[in-house]
Image 1 (cartoon, rainbow, N blue to C red):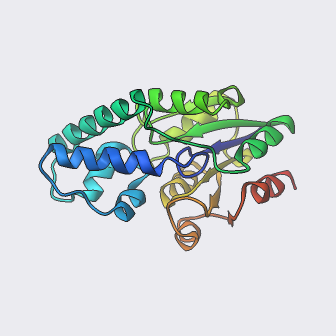
Image 2 (spheres, rainbow, N blue to C red; image 1 turned 45 degrees about the vertical axis):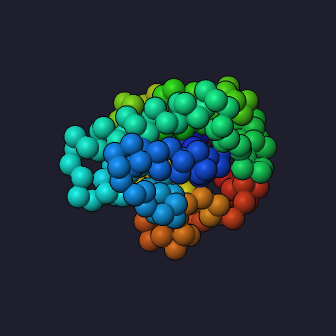
Length: 216
């Protein structure tokens, strides 16, 4: 059993615009000035309360939870109004389908919600490729290894036969904590140097490079 678990936003899809807009709306709902979009993007990958804690260090747990709910409301409204775009990065679908056809089992581990991930994968026509989906609704935030550990159990894979693929240091640290391989992608939200320092064995520059590396 060879298992490849992917992060979603920043790895499979480019959803930075709606994320930034929803986070800005969350801050505005509490009369706060939102941080720069660069800082917001750096928090992508964490579960919402943890992302808000990083962006607003003086906040307490109650405020973080309340702002997380405001974020969800803003994001759902934008999606219902057709303002959410989460396109696949070029080459990702071919990479996924080729790996699947060549015997790899695929999964997702993301800081998104169950509802958000389901909608994103379905909208991009790739939901059928994954056998395990792990989200922030049921697990501690990355880099805690719970998401990846549950993916291993659901897929019936051993850690040494699995790889976590993501764009942030949180993904790489989660992989190391779970005992799997870690591969970074350089088209997401953290610098390749950060990915290597966090434990990535390699950082790829394009989906076809990732596909070739895993199939070699």
